[in-house]
Amino acid sequence: MYRGTSYSDLSLFPDVQLPLKFKMPEFTKYNGTGCLYIHLKIYCGELGRPGQNERLRIQLFQRSVTGPALTWFIKNSTQFKTWDFLTSLFLDQYKFSTEAAPDRLTLRRMSRKSSESFREYAQRWRETAAQVTPAMDEREMMNSFLPTLSPFQFTALFSCVDRSFSDLIRKEEMLEEGIRLGRIKALEDPSTSNAYGRSSQSRSDEEELPVSAVILGQSSVSRRPPKQKSRPFPTQALGLAPDPSGVEQKRKRVFTPLRYYSSQAFDHLVTAGYLQPIPTCPIPVNLPKNWDPTAQCEFHSGGVGHTTDTCFALKHKVQDMIDEGLLNLGAQPDPPNIHVNLPQPYDANV
Image (cartoon, rainbow, N blue to C red; front, side):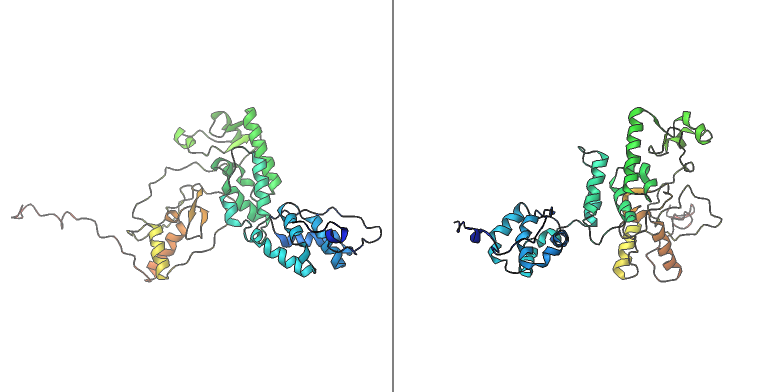
């Protein structure tokens, strides 16, 4: 049911007049999504000095909202007698928008849609990251964005980890253009080996190189050492064997064989109060050979790069505790001995 249609009925404050030579600002519109508190600050900044008049400030606020927010304002406009009352009601009405704002977990779960280009995805991700509180610096955003890409893109763009988003987008677009024009060749292509001063290697070593190690024109890229023969992960050993691409140590540490996986041992030690997760390590500049952007480690608070079962730091930590006599997770029994466990030929029972 409509009320009266006179000017006094339709206006919040009929006697309020605009200041002389007042020019109406182009207000930023709020539609009910996003942080309302930020909108209030923007509105007051755009209104400027005339906003010191409280009734004028209330009267013009409707020009800064749109959609459902404007409808709500009009329906409740008769209650807005003071600015404080208006803002308290409005903040209470749309507080869910602030509470539902994206967080760092939201960013890690984002992925590129099949219908959008890399630039569109990067811009969408960057706009979402701008809404996260507390604010993320450029380095944290890059460390969070790269793991959302495919393994190929992650490795190809990893050199941009210390650069800006615009640099990352430009490099990816150059990569796509090079692939489209056939100007990019994989490092394992024999025709490109001399350009990098690489000696002839066996085909088995060449096949292990990442497909994302590419060249564009004559630009040089840093190469990784040849991949050594990988060793299977022992089912009863705790932790990860040393990086096969690393230099052989003069003295290797001897680890106590256990009948637990690293993840199982970690759970037991946390429950018993012996261990706590440690902070996540930043993504290294020189990417290890066994780096896996899809793997997560509970010991490193969910950090990416390796699993709990392949965490070398956890293996050393547990061995330190064993060496100090702080725990015994249950050593494996001695292997069978044919001189002890089997009957002798002269045994009468044979």
